[in-house]
View 1 (cartoon, rainbow, N blue to C red):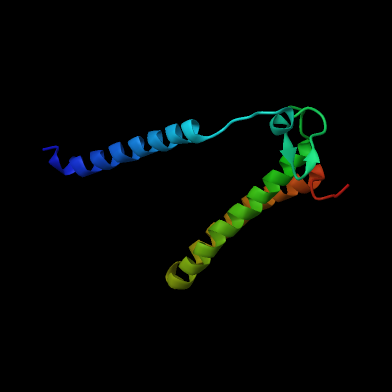
View 2 (view 1 turned 180 degrees about the vertical axis):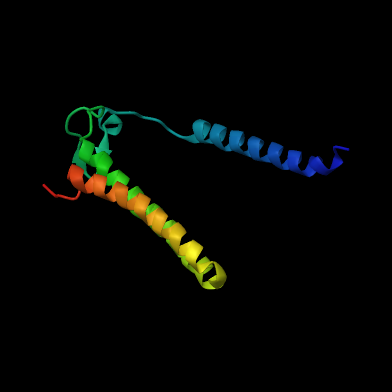
Length: 121
């Protein structure tokens, strides 16, 4: 009864053993000489300014929301266009569906616009 699952279990066992072996070998074979310079935060060639736990401006999150709004719009519009081309008999329903979707995204866009996320300082 469990015989068909034996190859999957063997593969899983091999993957886990391989992961443990690789991690263990990297710890045994690597040389670690930590210094203050190696432990310092490094980003874009510039030393870190201030605390890494400081709060971000709300504009950062608004720009992230704007990216998500346009990303979701693109991801769903391309397959919709292909389906619209293939299903001509449901054309009216599909257009209504897409207008509803674009309307919901437009609300997010207007919210971000009113909050000032599109203005560069």
